[in-house]
Image 1 (cartoon, one colour):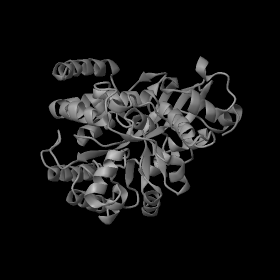
Image 2 (image 1 turned 120 degrees about the vertical axis):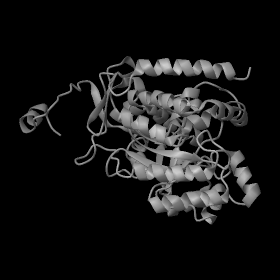
Image 3 (image 1 turned 90 degrees about the vertical axis):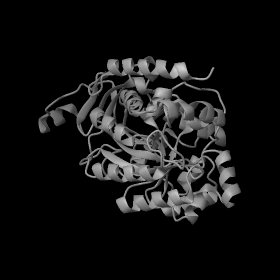
Image 4 (image 1 turned 30 degrees about the vertical axis):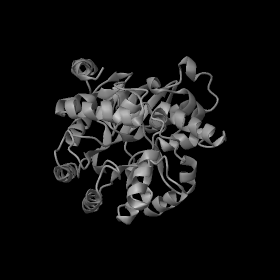
Length: 404
């Protein structure tokens, strides 16, 4: 770091990029996604969670989420990630091997997990087959520089105790994380309480489920005891404020979790319940939601929220030694964000401007591991026009089958 004259005298670059009027940031880390669900964006809005899932999402997934749809939905999502400054994602969905292939082509960094449930999924008729597919996927990508794998049981209420135990044992064997929905809704809390007389966290703890590096998505209804247990076990939480708001799931106790030593990252959830993958919007929402919920404008300040979207997200992923900040020896996962737009002027505080003013459309350049994925807002690794054509074709098929 230093003045231009000193840097130019000291270093000789293979390429120079004019970053005048731009912020240089580490790439953003989206810690909870279902990327192919971008294909279902807007398919059913303003409904209760039960109606949204049971009448629209699950039937549409069963009918249409084959390999082709997963490929197209993943391409759509990853183009959006790149355009809005996200360089690393944590995904759980079906046909995870297909999602991994798209990520390889797109040049993004991320973890993929094959969804495990007690009932048939679009990928596999039995959970045992999905478990074996997870094992093979983890072995395939063990040495990959950008793509990792997680074990992804859906939730405590949709997976049997046997399946949950199998999941954690597989994760231990392969030395990879578990990524699971946790305490997302009051309904989930009630289901687990009626079955086992425990909270979801305590129930999973009774199965010796929790291990260091595991990831719980949402965490909306974690009480103080749950938080202490998770902190002791080294579990991280992916906070998804916009999805939680839209589905009326509640407000996660983020300041309390952080005070108890939990690592908390930010995630968008799937675009079918958000409805976008813009992490700049997620940062702004996370900060404002916490303030109004606590009636305290000082909680989740701009610097804290930016850390949640960068280095704290990297810690959640287990990759804080590689990404999440701009430091010597770390991977060059970088973005440039323009501050020239009307909504970015005047500039007094950089952190405030990034969190409260910027949005994904302000990102001009995106790089992962030293490779440009976007320059001057032009995608370089994905064909946007072809993606849009493929999305249009699939949309027509899906629309024809939706209930009136």
